Amino acid sequence: QTGSLYLVGVGFDGTYFYCPEFASPTIYKFDKNGSYIGSFTVPGVPDLIDLTYDGTYFYGQGQTPTNVIYQMDFTAQTLVGTIPSPHAAWNIAYDANHDGFWIGQWSTYLSLIDRSGNVLDSMTPPDSMLGMAWDPWTHIEGYTGPFLWISTGTSTGMPNIIKVIDLATKTLIPGIEHNVA
Image (cartoon, rainbow, N blue to C red; front, side, top):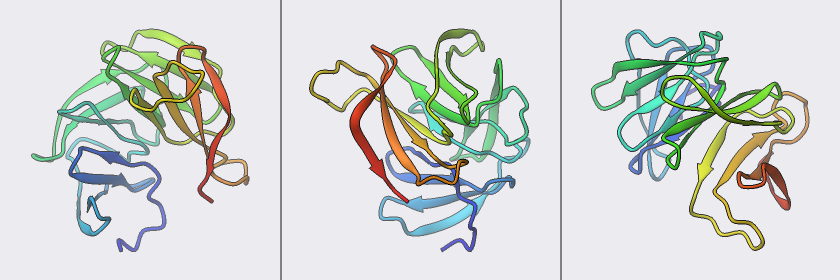
């Protein structure tokens, strides 16, 4: 619907889906049914890859590792502030239990940071991740959660597989994955 082949990440605020265009400052907006509404840019925010939402604001980081996470108001289409990041955050998910952000880049690292950019936790990431979501709601037998859903395989030429990490044990849960290729 947008004509773009480069919608990589997505954020959802309960009403609208927002998709940043890879290597562009453009953000596309869709309703709950997937109908295209329009596009916009946020002045002062470069190209974004992934988005997350904390209930008030959206957050993301540019494709060029800037080590800054941008805090944005999509209703007003304004930059609210920035959060220092210890490294590039090409994947980002808001963790409400810690009021922080899980951030990662491909298979280099996966860290939980607070709003000051301090690393609270880290783990070995799965292969080739691009996109993630924090999930305290799902119940998976034998695991306590919360969970971190990770989109993998995007840079290895393998199928795009969504996998789930149990944050209590910091391990991938075997047998639960979704091939979205």
